[in-house]
Image (cartoon, rainbow, N blue to C red; front, side, top):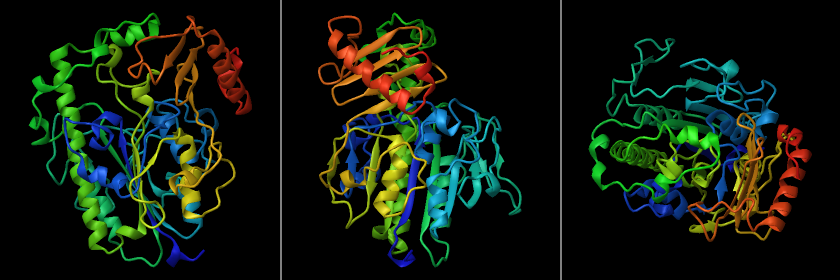
Length: 439
C-alpha cells in the first residue's frame, strides 16, 4: 500500500444522539455549524439506520460490519467476540497508525474498565479507551503509567476535565503526533446520553420552558413492553429540563468538533482526512411516552451520518438511500480502497457517497435479540414483530411520527410481503429470530 496516497480517518462517534438535534437535519432550537460543515462540504445521509438501538450491539455492528448475534455482543455489557475483525484492525494491517479514545462498551461488565492495547481490537493506541460510564469529570494523573481519575457523577468538570472537552484534547494530541504513515482514530464521546446535564455554561444555555413536548407524549401502546417504559416517563416540566440539557450537551459537542476542524487545518491535513460523524442510536425524549432507546420507533434507529472527503465526495451530496450501520465497515474500506476481511454481513455503499449509480436494496433490518424484536425499515415503511406476536407497521411517508399502527388492519398483503422479507433475511443470516419468526 502506498501510504502517501492514503487518507487519514477521523471518526467522531457520540452516544444516544437523535437526528433532531442537528441543524443540518432541520433542528431550529440550536445551531450546529461545525457538525453541519462535515455534511455541507461532503455528504449527508438522510436515511442512515442502526440495526440495533442499544449501545453494545450497535457499537459492535458498527465496528465489525456484522449483526449482533454474529459478533457476540448482542446485548449491553457483553464483550465483543475476541476473533472479530474491526475496521481498525483492517487499517492496522494496511499500515495505519490506529487509536481510540472514549467509551467502548464492548468489553463486558467492567466500569470504567480502562481498555488496554491487548484488548482494544485493532486500535493500537488505547490509553484513553474506557469500557463504560457517563461521568462528568475525568482528570489526568501526574504519572503517565497511571489510569485517569474519574469523579462521582455529581461532580462536573471544566473545559479541560469535562469528558467531551477532555476527549477532544486527547484526539488533538493524537492527530499532532509525528508519524510517517496515515492514521485512523475514533473518538467516542459519552454525551448526550443520560445523565443529560452538561457542564456550565451549556447547562443553562436553553430555557426549559421553551422546550416543546412531543405531540405523541400522551400516546399509549397496547404492547406491555412499551407500557412498562411509559410508566417511567418524566412529567412535562422534568422532560423540558432534560431536553434543554440534552441540546446543551450537543452544542458543546459541536463546539469541540470546531476545535477538531481547527486542529486538522492547523496541521495542514484537513482535506487529506476523511471525517465521519455519527452515533450509536437516538433518544426518544418523550416521544410515544418513552425515554431512552430500546424500542422500535424510528427516532432511536434513524440517526445522523455525515462524511467529508474533498476530491472524492462532492460537497453537498445528499444520500437518500437506506443504509445501515452493518454497512459501515465495508463502505469505509471501499471508500479508501482497502479489501475487507471477508466476514462482513453488510454492503459496500461507497459508490453512493461518490454519487455513482449502483444497484442497492433500500432496507435496514432491525436486530434486537435481547428483547426479541425483528423487523425492517424501508423508505416507505417500518415493519416489526415481537416474539409474543405483537406487530408494528407504520407508513413512514404519511405518518412520520408513527402514531397509527397499521398492523392487523388493512395492510394484509403488505404485511405478508414484509414478513416474507424479514423471514428470509433472518434465515439467511442465521439470526436467532429465525427460531420464532413466522413469515
